[in-house]
Picture 1: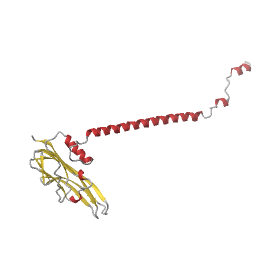
Picture 2: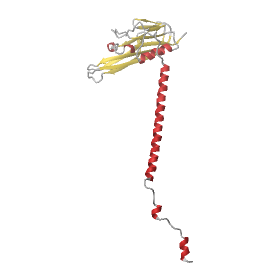
Picture 3: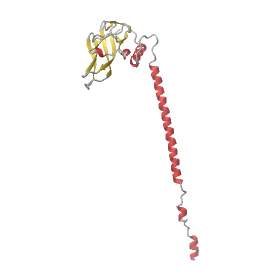
Picture 4: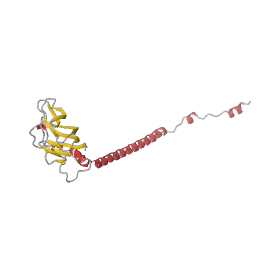
Length: 234
């Protein structure tokens, strides 16, 4: 065969320069577009998460407000968050037969604490620091006290005791000023609760060995003793 036709039938390869040519900047442009899209997507997701978080917080706040409303205007005692919540719970609870809510007296002179007589008392009586039971049944008892200690050069043990018929049934103890270095004021909260079956004329009282540290000035409304009849035998 004539060499001329073979040369005409052979495929012609494209020039090397033409096959390898890539427009300058096209790769960088593609990467830049991808980065921008990723940035926009991430920003949108973060904004969505933030909106969801804010909405969740608002729902929780609304539920909290609905759960414990402000006490009526005719309630004579008002305290901080803890005592106010406790008082609201007691006033809304279904038990109305026997319950009490007392705040500690400003004039403490003995280990057995005394309480303000103008507290809220229903179905029980108060006498010389004792709540006296009038109806038998299971009673829930809770006491909360605030202490203010100016540390001496030794540790101080604070103890709160719940007494039934002058016998200690439950206690809470904490040690402060353990560094044995005289420092400024230390605030300490102690609380304790008890569920016990009580007969008629049983007494409930609170004992604090170092009663001089009970803070009746800074947090006077946070020192409370409260009881309610949980289940009666009637």
